[in-house]
Length: 525
Ligand code: ADP
Ligand code: ZN
Picture (cartoon, rainbow, N blue to C red):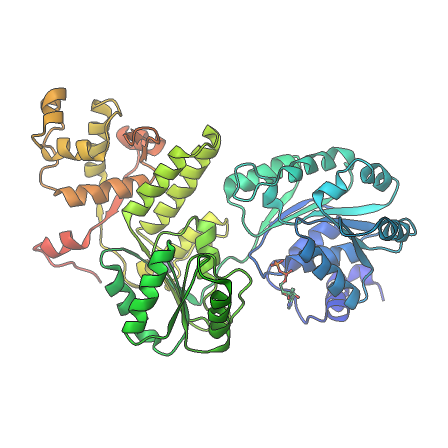
């Protein structure tokens, strides 16, 4: 039999014989094939997608030893143990080994007995190991949790930065970089630094089609919460709150309303917290009300809903947290309530942080991505998946925007008024003043600055103040305007300048209050 002619079969039989799996999960085979072919790859796959299998299989198919860089000791130990259980020769060198143990691992390596060696980045780059490895047959480098190379990312590890040198030191050895969380700038950074621009990007499977997505503006959070969980009587879910106090309050409130709710946050005594977590894991009907401290490593398949009572910290965090619902593949729901105050507070936090200007700029971009998701006029899933580079194109039919499409109107004229007012006043004023100009307000500030003499003064008086606020929000979400981090003044963004030049149009969502006030009933097919 010529295995080479039937690579499918040889990979599948290895999958079965070595790892005991009947099939690849989505995306795995492509990554394995690329690595076997000797190509460098950046694989972005969600947690649980089975990243380890990708490089472990490739390691077995290539001659020589694969070096795996991983930031976590516990993770390395797990992987080595499970590889050994599958009959694969693997080891790790780490700070817990004695000198003799390290020598013994090294002897196995030079004898060609090892297929995979796990290391921390410090161990690999410590100066002695690399020259020694250069004399061995290294088949591949694997960088796990590759987003740690990103200076702008949420988990930067300076020692990962040294890995940038690998490409030059071993120009012919492919590098496999793996991560579950890499937005566009982080990806670019991994591609440029670690892979020196020479690698394939593979993004896989972020969609969780069984989770229905809803996002709503917070107006009466408690009532919104009760209305939502009514259909989940006796089922379990997670309610995420921003603060410990609101965790306590919300859990009490649910209990008063007849639900079995338990609080969980880092300020509670460890034993109580643990007991609550255990109840949640053991019982089929408990609602966990928690800060984001809850959930790491929790793998309960039948969580039916996840609710965010506040804006999550990022798209990545949102995706990870809502993804704790419906692991069993059965219908589940995710609801996010957001208030514009959340966004303002986040913006102020970024502005006040000691980070570099570049980092601040990227943090603002990330926040705006979240805002675009909240204000999406069409399919939310499309916005979410596009953020992870996994756009399926078609609307999902399983989010609030698909099921209950918001009423849209052509807002090009309104947007134009806003842009004109911002430009005419030198991009120096915040939203309240711009709104006052548009509605023709008679404030001291307007009189002092003679803004009542502007052509746009009063040009938007048919629209009430609340609707202008919504228009500002949607313009921000659509990338037409920006908010200055220093002063909170509105700025014209590049798409805004395009629109002012007459390029393109923009649709806005009609707000509920507006809809109710409108005399003509909405005509929807
Ligand atoms: P990740 O690192 O992407 O979060 P892991 O590599 O830890 O994911 O894999 C998650 C789980 O999926 C592991 O228990 C692994 O054994 C399992 N797994 C991986 N590939 C497959 C497969 N093809 N079929 C079934 N289970 C798989
Ligand atoms: Zn949708």
